[in-house]
Length: 333
Image (tube, rainbow, N blue to C red; front, side, top):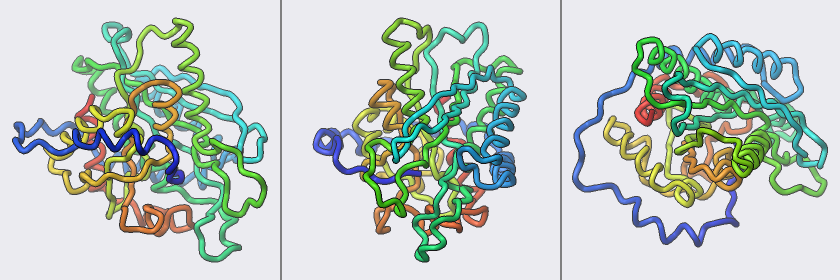
């Protein structure tokens, strides 16, 4: 999970905020979609059992293999995108993005929906008060595993829809690599730009190139990125880049959350712009993409006190929050 980014796009967004006021007339409550938070919770526990999924570690490789196996078992056609991106030092970082394509022969050429989360964990606990503790790896229960756990359960539900012939909208689930490799606070050298979200930058650049060359047969209607979506005290405001690039879809998602009874969790506060995977999907790939991310404007950083610390563990995962996020995502499919 990444830092806030203040410099880009703020003035251009301010004029759009008027469209975000909730409608005074409520529509009929939508049907509650199928989602099992117990299953999502187990998927998170399984990731945590590997240990911190720091890029280039054994745990990271084991988790990537497991994710590929899970997606295939749930009915997806799986693509592994490999490449390199320069990190904060300018050194090439190996990237492994995992893409699960869910479609039937009847739906494969229809406009798709993109769902994403990052599966890597931050190599440094650089929000720890004790300097020596900043060199530990972040466990990444909420910051990484929670979004992946929700999307694996979404994948399971999509597999069931395909099996009973109720699947109508093709979906791609992407597990992005190297999202949390941004410049650590312990680094004293010159910081490069765009050091966060390396996997989504690689994917978005490749997609944009293929689209320009006419190699994309089925494009995306919109996307949703999940990040830090498991905390018991979670707060999901309307993130500013999502408002700038995908306001209509953000409005649609938050309205669905309200109809499902999650209006307090998916609140109407406007957060700062946050550099997350959705930013590059919007900016580079040109796909309107919405970020669902824990952010509380009352906190100094906006993020939980255990963000980027050794305390990002299963103690901070709530099944009720997972259920809410999962139902809201499923309501868009």
